[in-house]
Length: 133
Image 1 (cartoon, rainbow, N blue to C red):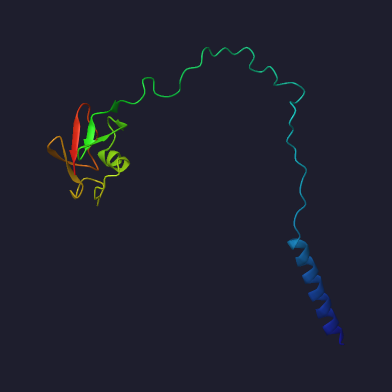
Image 2 (cartoon, rainbow, N blue to C red; image 1 turned 45 degrees about the vertical axis):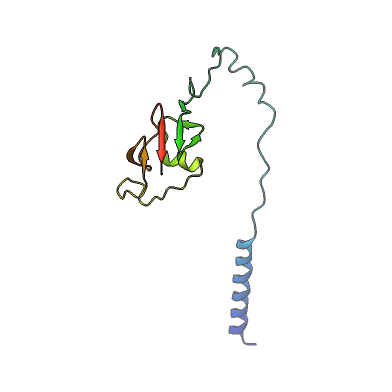
């Protein structure tokens, strides 16, 4: 072998061994999360806080349920006042065709208490509500 071939072979060997070192996976560091409190510093941090009685974080009186909603003569339970008619109809498993969901096309037109309304935009009113598809 010539000296140039030996030099080239040595250079190639040096490049491949250094690239293998870059491919090695880093070692895992030890976990620094402690389960016990740090010297008891935060044990009584909020002992002087008095928040009073806990209140219900939800609605105070609950949703306004309208039990007098019917779809094609079938009673619909758990219809909430202000809920979209398309959601109520889907819950009652009544199929209403929709196209734009903006109220522009009129594909979802239904009769609500005898008047035409678009199911994708109309909401459940208070009181009696009779929906005909």
